[in-house]
Image (cartoon, rainbow, N blue to C red; front, top):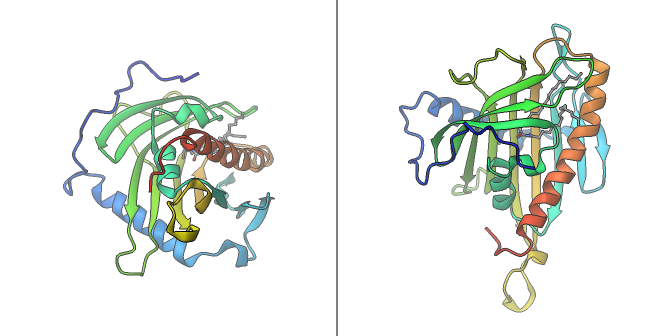
Length: 255
Ligand code: 16C
């Protein structure tokens, strides 16, 4: 089932963290900081221009209708709570390249283009074609980070950001290139077990906030695109979180 380009470089055994002199270092830190700021200040449920497009109790998906030069670029935001898994586990699986095709149902292909460090790599996703639009692809860096609440000003959370970039080995010459700024931020809530017994999966809940700002590139019919988003974003969240539950159920809890 796992479709990967044979030329994809596999993750090296050990790679040092991204050096401050790396061309993406500043951008990654700024983008991560903006997502954390947005998490702490934006409550879409209170804003009139955000509409809820899916409400399944523990999972809600919101969008804000926006167009740029006639192309819909609706920002999406989803919040959900899932029992039995930690934020670290959820982010680890969202970031991990080798299992991406096991839960990604909207891709034809995903290939790693370059590993920048042990927490950051660049990949190329080829998205399934949606009639009548042309097929799309994306080239983006994926970065995973733990933010600890050292100073009480930020929540203790795990974050993964997928952010569009250019790469000489991934030129936009075969498909329409989409651009995106996607973040998955997770906080783990632990309900202390009675009698100081060991924490089990029954005592943990993960609060997930997912945001996706995607520009579909060239022409895309707004009504079709919006119908696909309305169906595919909730489907992705359900499928992905079920995947994490299944992968971790017999494993030790990764806090
Ligand atoms: O975040 C997700 N996945 C990440 C890892 O792969 C990564 C990818 C983000 C890209 C998400 C947006 C893709 C939009 C493509 C626009 C295509 C235009 C088509 C024109 C239509 C008229 O961060 C999870 C992403 C979950 C995506 C849900 C929405 C995707 C729609 C894609 C259309 C393919 C449908 C295939 C139907 C079987």
